[in-house]
Image (cartoon, rainbow, N blue to C red):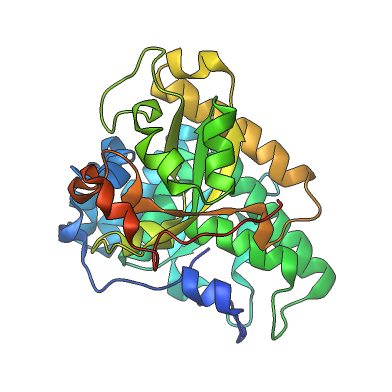
Length: 300
C-alpha cells in the first residue's frame, strides 16, 4: 500500500514504520543494472521515461497497461490508477481500491514501485487488497492496524519471495544460519541476470515497494521480510515468466487462506547478502558483521 494514503490518521506499529523508511531519490536514480530492479526492468524502463515526462503522462501509461492486461483488484473491479488528490476525503486507501478498482497514486518512487508490483504479481496484490479491505470492513480505520493488517502491510511494503527447492537452504534462512545460506550454499543461488537450467536451488523476487525504494541507495543493513515458498525441483528449469506466474498463484492462495498472519510469518533476510547482488559479499568476511547477520532461532 502507499504509505500514509488512508483518509484518516493511523498510528502504525514499529515494524510497519520500519518497513516504510524511504529514500530521497528520483525516477532518474533507478539503476536497472541492479538485480533488485532488473526483475522489473522490461516494464519499468518504459514507465520511468513516462514518469520523467510528467505525472499525467505516467498515469496514462499505467492505465494503458492496466487496460491491456485486463487486471482487477481484490473485489473484482477493473484496475486503474488515479491521482492521489482524487481519493475522496475520509476514505480509506485500501477500501477505495477494493470498491472502485482505482489505486490512488502519487508521482514519486514509492508509488512507482507499488504500481510495478501490481503488474509483476497481480494475484498477490489483489489478495492483499482484498484482505486489507475485509479487515477494514470488520474493524474500521482505527489508531492501530491489528496483527493481521500489520502483517499484510509488512508483506506489501517490505517482502521478498524466497523460492527454494532445497530444504537445507530453507532451514538455513529460518535458523539464521547465514554461513550455510550464503557461503557454503552459495552455488545454489540463482544467477542475478541469466536463465538457469536446473542448477539453482533458491532465488529471490522483490515484491515490497518500500523495499525497492530503499534500495535506490542500498545499505548493508537493509533487511527484507522473506516469505518462504518451497518449490519443486523442476521449478528452476522453467523460464522466469512461468516461475513468476507460479509464485503469484501459490502465494496468493496461501495469503487468502492463512488466517493467522503475523510477523512470524516471515524470516529476516539482509538483501545485500544475496550472492550476485553486492560485490562486497564475495568476501566471506562480509557476513561477519553481527549487527546485520544476527543469530537467533524462531519457529514459524
